[in-house]
Length: 521
Image (cartoon, rainbow, N blue to C red; front, top):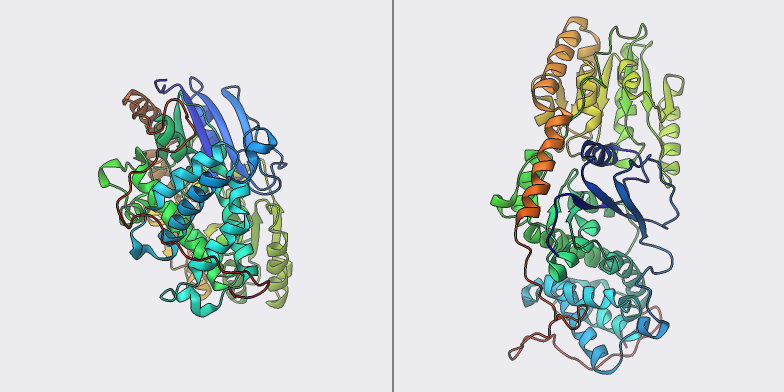
């Protein structure tokens, strides 16, 4: 079926329409800005029970929450069809799985991650991947691969418990391969990583055009997140290799990649994306909805707006605030934004830090506000302290309101700000405090920077410009000829058998007995 630019499947992970934040704001802008386009939303979520926190417009024709955790949400097939493969199919699965593991843990073998992933996708589409991955034979395959003499994972002496943990994480990560999307439109993944899995499968099997947009750098954020995870190193090595290879595959296979800044573009090119398939489309705001904020508050105030999340590095902001307050005792810090489910402990840590620094009375958590411009107007200076960003809405919104800003030099921040604000290195409270103090002590400079910031938004970063860019891209992708199917027409879910030459299958070995809590016997 030919693709149509009037139908788009938007693929999200942990964002729209279940969470408020910059990426969700962008998604909602896109959907509302194109009432002539029918959107389906396939949202990868934790449990599938997360509430919808956005009012979905009428051109969202379907919304599906696809849970990564909890019971598997595979196709509605008979129970026996969801059992692990047997006989020849079982051997074929193990060969595919071992090639996948070797492509992750021993890249020098030359096995193709993408080829293995597509074969697993065919199995997932028949509802049989989860059972296959959780079989004892698959567990042995992982233990065998980890314990190959020349691999560094062997020295870590991975245990069966480690293998169970890694298998659990990998099985959940691969679940989106089972998700089917409309074949009559464009598949638009709004992040790299797991959201690309249904798009990659639909592109491979049905020729659906695949558009990839990145805001933050997904792979970088996975590495940052795993720094604090408690899993053993072999587990981390496997999962980070999976995210790395999936990221590269998405870059190579997307029909078009639309980073929201040039910083992301450079990451994507280094990650294997062809330069001629990358087109930067900046985020935008409506200057009429974010008008000039007017007079500053009577009390000197730092304003921050966003979701309370470790990636926003509010510890650095609170430490910088404490330094500034030593010089300006009346200074306040107001933090506007929700605490997403699961981040309650992070807020508690921030409150304890403020208490340890003796500034609790000056720090206020304001929660989510419906009148977002008022959050920027509440500050003499608006601050962004993140360790990772794409092209942050909170920054260009504050600029549109005519407020001076101090931001960390991450993602597309410097591209957004230009010479209309101060940019400092991330995770350096003293440097951030010095920049804040400099602006707090110079009202004329704040006013001039705010005026220039608003003009920069009007000239470069409007909502209409951003939405029109994607409208043209949807039409362009729809006009391209769909790719030929690579699977058999009589068995649409069965992978094409590969013609093998000597030495191309995964090396076989005698299965080792598993000893609970230990390495293979």
